[in-house]
Image (cartoon, rainbow, N blue to C red):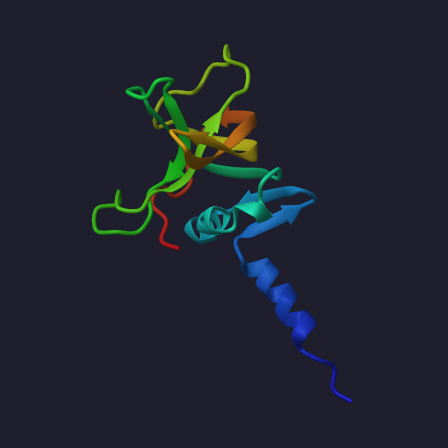
Length: 142
């Protein structure tokens, strides 16, 4: 009697998906950065309340009030700026210090939703934000 291939396929898919799940932590890896980030935005109910860990460039929009902080990578497109992928990040402690713009960081935080002008948004409520010396790929394809 042949054994079904189904369990092997599932294991392979999980190993190759680009994100690892350790307990309640979702780690978004470089290989599938855009795809995994998109999955969070498309299926937020599956991720809300879970801890997400990712690396990327630190960005800010100082013209927003309060300033908008985010961790991202450039996505596919003709100019590298057409489809950026990442998350807004925020420290709950209003006195927390943020890194410099364009620093390479590792961010970890709990995914939460909020509304601004009656529009829903997602962000990571940070539990850690560390500047790294070694940079990953700034532009990712998938």
